[in-house]
Each structure stands twice: as structure tokens, then as C-alpha cells.
Image 1 (cartoon, rainbow, N blue to C red):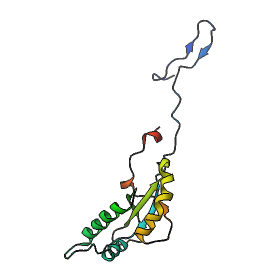
Image 2: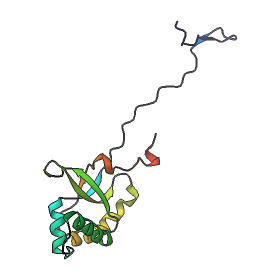
Image 3: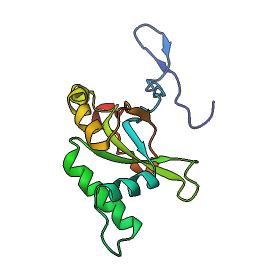
Image 4: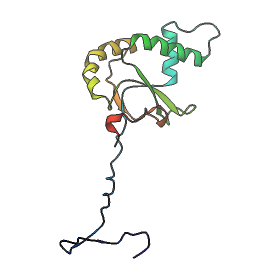
Length: 149
């Protein structure tokens, strides 16, 4: 018996030896994978969208135009969440934008998606349904309290 272990405890009444009370080991729980439900947008698509909507001004850089596009979309898309996705197809940046209408951490808002989706499709000019994506680690919010263990 090493010096760090506690000696067994003897019950004086029963004469039974029992092990010391040790808390059970913590159960390993897989972390809840964060996913976003939305549209993956390339930098080129965002720049073209800004030009088509007349958001580009003289001397405006592409970064400024992207910001103007997101301000335009923020005012028109209810429930907008902006995330980044790792994207090997984007050779210059290595990531793409994701305009998310929902995520898998707040299922209470899932019922709102059906009502918002037609407006989103009209503003973005698409008939395609959104997809589930894994955002980059930088845009994953802290784990909500109800999922912490």
C-alpha cells in the first residue's frame, strides 16, 4: 500500500471492511457539435451581389464592399447569423462566409425558419435550400449553459 492511498475502513459493528468513499470518475461526454444551417457564400459572389445591388461606390475596396453587402443583408434577413467556413476551394482566403438562418443549439427557434426562409430566398435570389455546415472554430460561440456538464 502506497502512502497516497487511504487504508480500508473497518465497520466496528459488523466487522466488515469497506473501501473508502471515493467519488466515481466523471463520465466522458462527447462535446455537442455546433452546426449552422445556411448558405455558403464565396467572396466573389458577395462582390458581385454588391455590384448588382448598386452598393459599390467610387474608390471602394472589395473589403469595404463586403461590409456594405453585410449591412444591406443584415437589415433584410431576419435572424441572420454570420459565420466562417473552412473552404479549400477559396485558394486566396482559405475560407468562405456562411449566412446562417439557424443553428443546432437553439431548437426553440427551429419553428421560425420555415416562416423566414421564403424571404431569405427572395433577398438572396435563390431557390436552393440552405445546408448544414461546420463553422470554423473562430466563430463558434461558447457552449450554452444547458449543454455544459
